[in-house]
Length: 400
Image (cartoon, rainbow, N blue to C red; front, side, top):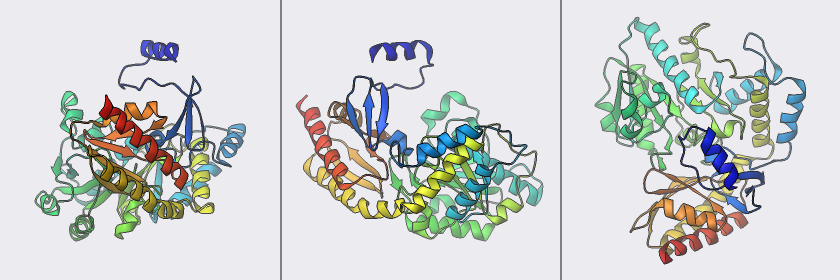
């Protein structure tokens, strides 16, 4: 493993502090490194591998598409594009979709669509977007501009103008920012990087109400919390709130790099037109074949229903861990998107490294939260194994 790590450090730009593990293969909900050590994966590529590794039928669908054609330009149609578009639009109850290569690009497209919608209403270019403190939407300049974390922003200013920040789950702080220039309000239905905070019903429904009253577009970022992770196909369904624009990625391709932004009928009819937006690779046959297959599997094998069934047991085991260890102070989250607050002299980083020794992969969210986002196909036996390994890891941190 050391030789691979040295090689990567020599040639790859150092923008990640990687863990000292070289992953070689995956099977089900386990990963294996080049030394043959196996890890129970409760990170799933940061909520990407919803179906785990080598889910029956998924690899075969990708290989079949490779044998046909992987890429054509968006000057032409393809069958996978048409199929994936219909399936994701119906699953989201939206109207139109634009496929991107990543979640960040989906956010960029959502911002452009919102600004174009407002521009077509009044011909002005001084519109504003309200975003949330402690949010995370990506690292491009546009996505950074609506990310409520100064640490990510400071070296890259000036960013996109016309962005104001309100407090997440504080409706009054949002209402105080709304004015005649506001064209959109953007938020994660469940904040991920900010520490696993689900929106409250009062907050989300209150924002939807003011958006309806003032013809402001509601943009929901479901890149991490969407695609079944919270026990609904999209997290906003639990609130009975429908956005005007929604961004998705991560589990949309279950390992194939693909994202999308979706628009409702009102927004799709009065925003982006030919020439306004594009991408060379977005929506190519290979990526959309993956999307189409993922959505078929979700429906056929009732993946969302499985999340609803298994989530209470997951929460129960995590609550037991919090009760057992004084360095774990709280749990929060929805479905299989859970965070445990770490304190009392212990950091998430210490637990993460010790867990790796035990053969368990978990990650962090913010400065004090241990994030658990396993494949959606986990079973009770995997949760039991996680709890045992995590408990030993915490004991190991305390011992050291």
